[in-house]
Structures are given as structure tokens and as C-alpha cells.
Length: 114
Image (cartoon, rainbow, N blue to C red):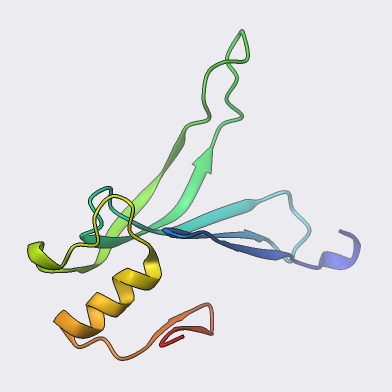
């Protein structure tokens, strides 16, 4: 990317949002942040400064691994968890009902209410 431009990519899945950022200074630095539900759907967790290897190993079958910092940003009461197949949309609905969450923005984009 000539001229020091940056690129930001956000991918929204059912149960998580991934954001990738490159630096405007033209370096090859890349950072990744992820907001995702826990396995049981009881909390939203924000992972920041994720770094990942290429995976593959010697025979190409080893999965990619990621390391970073995580912080739980909101936990629902146990009875309100959306369960293993739950979506972020369901999570925000229940967060409104049980925790009084009225609005959620991700990178300046309103995601709740939809």
C-alpha cells in the first residue's frame, strides 16, 4: 500500500466480530481484535492485540494458534445465557432485557438496537 495508507477490515459472524487493522506508516504490522461470545453464550469477551502464527506445522495439519489479551465486557445472569449456538444479536437482546443495555456500537457502527 503505497503512500502510507491503512486498511481496516471488519468481519461479522453470528457469534463474533473480527477486526483487522494495518498501520498507516506503511509497515507490515497487523493487529487483530475479536469480540465474541463465550462457549456457553453467557458473556461477551473482547480479545485485543491478537497475534497468530501461520499454522501448518511440518506436515500442514497443525491449526493456527492465536495469543492476545482478553477482557470480559458483559456477563448475563446464568438463566439468561443464550447457549452454545447463540448469536450476538440474541446476546444483545438479552443484555437489554436483563442488564438494561440500550445501545451497542462497534467501531462507530450501531449494532444494537438493529
